[in-house]
Length: 206
Ligand SMILES: CC(C)(COP(=O)(O)OP(=O)(O)OC[C@H]1O[C@@H](n2cnc3c(N)ncnc32)[C@H](O)[C@@H]1O)[C@@H](O)C(=O)NCCC(=O)NCCS
Ligand SMILES: Nc1ncnc2c1ncn2[C@@H]1O[C@H](COP(=O)(O)OP(=O)(O)OP(=O)(O)O)[C@@H](O)[C@H]1O
View (cartoon, rainbow, N blue to C red):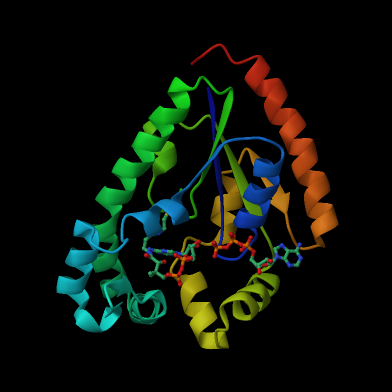
């Protein structure tokens, strides 16, 4: 199974790309989805968050993501505290999902992991290829502000809580430039899929 990491910066277009890969029939494991599953109502991780950040981040048993985001993305110590709580649960759930797909013997599995480099996923040697979706910082900030209804400084704080995009691009096997329209993005993704299928066809590992 060819394990392909998909990453980038916040709001550079990873989810848009993973949607296109999914439409093309490739299986995806999405770390943002996993990060939501592990804090569903009643989970031990949600209980730990409540103890660490206080009851104000929970509304009727449900995590108030906006409120927690405001706390952690404006204070790196709080973000580190949240990461320490969530990371073990996310890693375990991701490993289970990867094993599931391995048992299905799919030729290619996409791991959509925003913090792939920050969390050193690439270092365990299991990821075969890495795709980085990138934009200029101005495009990234505009799209982020628009999508999440954030002020300029809130958006900048979020961008700053990640590794610089240029570092990620330098470590990529494939770079997708998402500064243009969705049509240009689609074309790049179509070419990439052909490429990955060829690599997977020549891949003797499982
Ligand atoms: C703080 C939370 C509740 C804010 O929720 P919100 O719905 O506003 O954002 P969402 O989860 O959709 O994440 C949006 C993007 O923010 C960035 N981001 C998320 N968590 C982090 C983090 N810990 N550090 C840096 N950037 C992050 C990613 O680019 C992600 O794609 C949420 O981001 C969270 O639970 N984060 C910690 C879990 C985590 O590490 N997730 C990333 C999995 S690799
Ligand atoms: N080529 C494009 N042209 C215009 N808007 C785009 C383009 N690609 C993505 N977008 C928009 O930009 C925003 C960010 O894209 P997306 O949600 O795919 O990013 P992401 O990298 O998955 O973000 P996050 O890290 O926050 O999960 C979305 O609102 C999306 O619709």
